[in-house]
Amino acid sequence: MATILIVEDEWAIAELLYRNLSLTGHECTIARSGERAVELLEQRAFDLILLDLMLPGIDGFAVMERAAGVSSVICLTARGGLHDRVRGLNMGADDYIVKPFELPELLARVQAVLRRTKKTDRTYRLDQTHIDFEGYSVTVAGEKVELTPQEFSLLETLVLNRNIALSREKLLAMAWGLDFLGDSRTVDVHIQKLRKKLNFEDRIKTIYKVGYRLEDLKP
Image 1 (cartoon, rainbow, N blue to C red):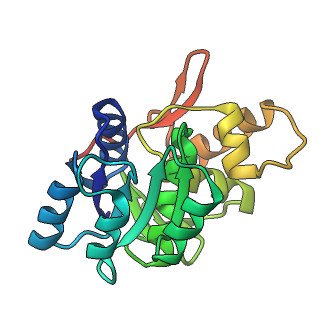
Image 2 (image 1 turned 45 degrees about the vertical axis):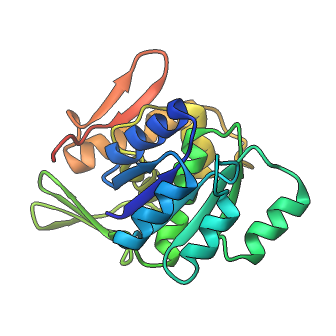
């Protein structure tokens, strides 16, 4: 997938991001200070920086100046004021997320930025299922499988958030949209269809009292 530099001095948040982004297939590195982030940026290139602006020593804005023209940047910070948002975006940030944040939203924004910069895979293979996100096509054992647009949207959401348990409400918001007026049973129906069509009975796990998770723990 992509190489991501997580610049965050709060260890619990850094670990949360590292663990969940790694589970979805990304290669992640943590820097807990602006100085360390600059060192890493001088040593190698990253596809994306998740950047806290409030850092000890060199702040996030100074890090952005060093990263200009090198990496895509998502500002992740408790600074929610308009001035800071405008400054970050004017300096070249691709997105701006204010803490506290919800993990599924952050993961979706990461994927959106990587998709725009073409730094993420647009195909995915699991068992005998192959998905082409650009061509909106799915094959199982070489045979084309017809999915409805909504089934494909749900499948893409599960793949992009693989190994992460998502509630039915989160799946509705991410795959159907916030303006969808149906209830969570719609998710159950579509999950059952995907399991049957893709032979994913053992891959799409039901998480008791939570929702669903697409399990793919291959290295």
